[in-house]
Image (cartoon, rainbow, N blue to C red):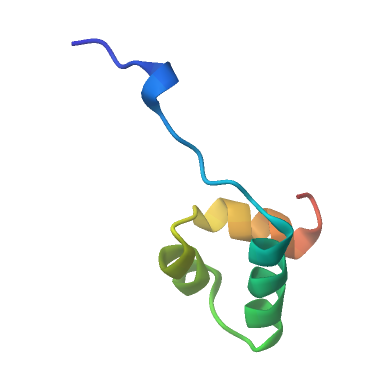
Length: 53
């Protein structure tokens, strides 16, 4: 069975989620812990941290 891209859902990065990520990063939490709690990829947390997203 072929993988169907259309069925893949993506987490929406709202301004509230981004603010929560930044707050938790400022508190010194690890990126992978934040990602696991919010259901995001650690790379996405890194992008928020570096300002790329």
